[in-house]
View (cartoon, one colour):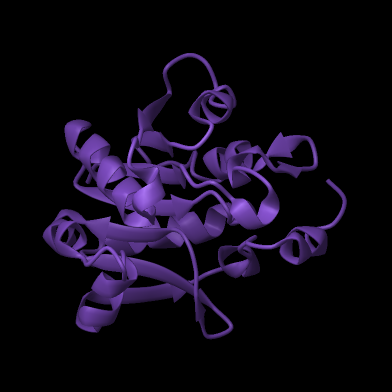
Length: 194
């Protein structure tokens, strides 16, 4: 099974004063932390979807071509447009499944990624990590679930696929980082010194 990981990094990050991809977690940006977490055996390609301040975000992508960058000119219409852009890139790379990972979750543990990959390899149409009863990231979508992602209503996004098809989902154990999203300055402060 060929799996492509897609980092969704096109948003404006209005509540944080700019793109979340540019935020720092120690010596690394959020984008760099996410790309490192997704650099796992079983991930055959990585894609970053950029939009707002695209050149600044793209500048954080390692040189050498190991990570593909896709620009979503429609990012202001919502995250689902970035999901579609990433899905198109994954399909072009010959993927059988994709991992969707929002850049505002920079603390995801490699073991969480491995468990999602394992569930996809075992035949799960959708694999989602959970921690303390909360759904986390990255979510894995096998090719069979892609038509539902493409047809999801913009106002509900990819969550609509999870809500409408619970029988497709295999839940795997996620580490605490899988549910530690950063949406506000308070969330950022809880991560500790940057």
